[in-house]
Amino acid sequence: MLTLTKREVQVARHLDAESKGNKWRDYKWQLKHTIRDLDTIQKLLGITWTGEERADIQETTAKFPLAVTPYYLSLIDPKDFKNDPVYKQAIPSVNELQFFNYEMMDPLAEDKDSPVEGITHRYPDRVLFLISNTCSMYCRHCTRKRKVGDIDFIPDRKTVNRGLDYIRQTPVIRDVLLSGGDPFMLSDDYLDWILSELRAIPHLQIIRIGTRTPVVLPYRITDNLVKILKQYHPLWINTHFNHPREMTQSASIALEKLANAGIPLGNQSVLLAGVNDCPRIMKELVHKLVMNRVRPYYMYQCDLSEGISHFRTPISKGIEIIERLIGHTSGYAVPTYVIDAPGGGGKIPIMPNYLISWATNRVVLRNYEGVITTYREPDSYEPVFCDRNCESCKLQLKLDPADEYKTIGIEKLLVDYDQTISLIPSTTERVERRNGNNAEDDSLM
Ligand SMILES: *Cc1c(COP(=O)(O)O)cnc(C)c1O
Image (tube, rainbow, N blue to C red; front, side, top):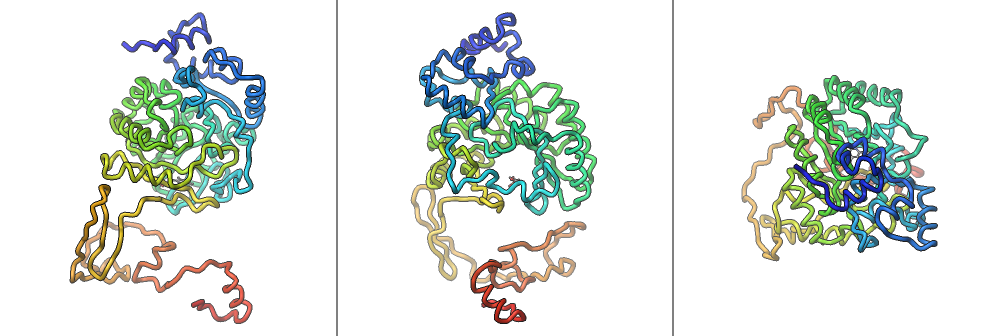
């Protein structure tokens, strides 16, 4: 039998003298007692802010909402709260009001790439579908601060229906990523409805859910929820642990339930200054994740959203962390470090360089220890000329109907069946000059 920690009992008693912590693991109790005011935070943590600090935090909450579950708040160590990774992610800071001219409301242009409200269709074969605009805990580093908690964006049944229609009518979509807000803030029945509508779409191969509840409200992962989820396989879940301290016994139990239901689990961390910008902390985190059957999927560079500048690190910090993971620990434990391109270009992977040089038939590589090695390439390799006539090719695909999407971007430069030799931005002065001089001539080299 699980017992509550001393801190949990303290917090529970303060919030609800009657239940004395008996309802701590009831997620509805947690939601009912979610903390949204500064007095309660001071009281529960036994801390006092100066008048100025308090006024600053108050001002911040007017712009970006505050909510923390009792569970997540109880993870804060009051003795050193100002450096506490949970405190920093959950309690507002006046730095959130600091804006820079290079920051944006919607840096990833999610709204521009949106064919219908709630859907972002950026990649050829998959969409992001925002089905909730609330969270049990508002992350101070949220990239979607513009939307989350905003009463102007409530994905009601009508909006969700329009999103479902878009997916139904768009056969290239084979993967949908449900996010928000947190999809697990929706009721079991409502989620069940959305999932069943999605599963009935023949071209939709996989469904993914992004949720932070295993981290901030692990009791939301109830037996009933899991029973619903496992009806809609193949279903994948990505969660969002940022610090090893977040991997508590309660979190482990939630993850275990999901994994036991056959749901592959991934984790998306955000690299955050003052929270996890340290190779040792990240290594401990990824080890705890794989021990709980969660595959570290992405480590994000902090976006250029407004109000999160104090969390941003240089890119070099992320490369350093990846350098100190690859080779040093299990491949399963190493996430892909990505920058989500400002302007809506999608996620771009970043890595240290392992390819040092290259000659006609040799590549020079280095490993994590600094060993420099050569790989001898074959002297004769018969490339298969590809005109995309798979019927007459000796390689066997024979996967009728293995659909292929049209060739995109860099891919065009690599394949035999496309004559493109360069990709040229449509807005260079040179292009404009050519267009002006001779509109017929479209060769730009
Ligand atoms: C991240 C993201 C996806 C999914 O990307 P994967 O690399 O497949 O995980 C899809 N659409 C949008 C808009 C995204 O931001």
